[in-house]
Amino acid sequence: MSSSSSTRPSIDWAARAAAVQIDGRPVIEGRRVDTQAGLQFDCISPLNGRSLGAVSRGQAADIDAAVASARAAFDDGRWARRAPAARKRVLQAFSEKILAAKEELALLETLDMGKPIQYSLAVDVPSTARCIAWYAEAIDKIYDEIAPTGPNALALIQREAMGVIGAIVPWNYPMIMAAWKLGPALAAGNSVVLKPSEKSPLTALRLAELALDAGLPPGVFNVVPGYGHEAGEALALHMDVDAVGFTGSTRVGRKMLEYAGRSNLKRVYNELGGKSAFLVFPDFDDLPRAAKTVAGSMFFNQGESCNAPSRVLVHDSIADEFLALLAAEAPKYQAGDPLDPRTVMGALVDAGQLGTVMGYIESGRSEGARAVVGGEQQRVETGGYFVAPTIFDSVSPGMKIAREEIFGPVMSVLRFKDEAEAVRLANDSPYGLQASVWSSHIDRAHRVARALRAGTVHVNQYDEDDLTVPFGGYKQSGNGRDKSLHAFDKYTELKTTWLRINP
Image (tube, rainbow, N blue to C red):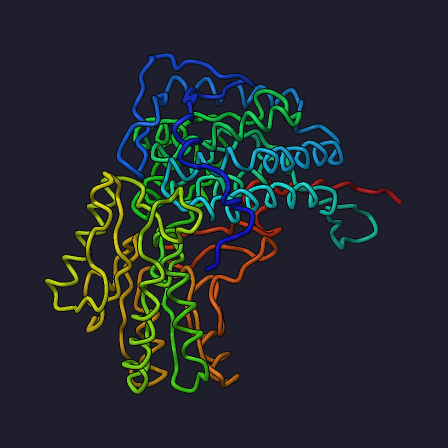
């Protein structure tokens, strides 16, 4: 992946980082407020293990205040009953505010969760702004329905905003994941309470301020930082929250469903983990491109992507050749200073994640896999959390590194003998988020794509994407879909109004 010209190498990002001062207080009812208990935690930067400042540790009482604000805003119609064209203008302005604050948001994202500044600038900020703008444009393009009833009736089918939406988002793409919830939820007329990950709360708080600057009424978008077992649990259990959009681990996704059952049976939409399979068949005629693609997709964002192609399934006859090509790609992704515009792989989000990833690497070795490249911590002297791009060979399907989501730059190569075995291995997973098929035979490409149990199947590419297509998975990768018009299904109710017409 090449460095974007938008990174403006003349910027002294280290100097800007040294001058950053954060405000970690919640945004409730259109303003920064102190938490009721006054508790805080340090926001630790993965670049060097140092504190960026204090962030409020929201509790149930703060969630109560945010939900009450959101409910009042919904009930009085300050947003929900605005004309679609008026909501559209505000969200368009919100998108423009995000782009105008591009460098500030990108720096916060890099300092907070460790991704390279070039990608924060070229990917995360523009993708966030585009998501908000796309759903703004969709507001006045969605029509309701009239059912095909008999002549003595008129049955109207309308989408209505649900009310108060709880959004709980992860730390790997803080802005983008927030936008995937905010775009359709706000466009539909809902109010939102967002709980960002305690590992990366900074951009969410700034997004709330930018939304207010763009004209979003107070109370419509509230942000409460805090720990998952405190603020997140309180939001998911809240009796006045109508739906929760959650992106995170399958373990916590199960809890979200439990919380719904313990509370008001609120709708829960989970976007969870993945262990995506990348299938390379011997008839594919450009193995170097396939190797370059899977390395770029796997090591992007330090491997901290739910759709990372971490299981590479290669036919026996080409496995050694393909492994050599992969090994040649790995040096391009050595961990570097995330504030250096030339860096393509940054730091893992925190010390806990570093320990998790190194534990999986040790597990792979102890179970008999062979680390072809990588397998060690890097840049230890910085105090940051860096791991070398790692590729394992001699991986069997039962190993932990082949079955469990690692969320780090660790790739497992497995070998198959024929198409049937490839499909069986790919589907032998509790997850079903994404997959990829590499074949020059159109019949095989379609046949295998149909057989794979995954929400998205890429053919002869990986990670090509657009807001117009849904994102989500089968099995334990979740339910519902982010992105595309299908996301409106998560944040609206269908109401039928049946009118009798007398002759």
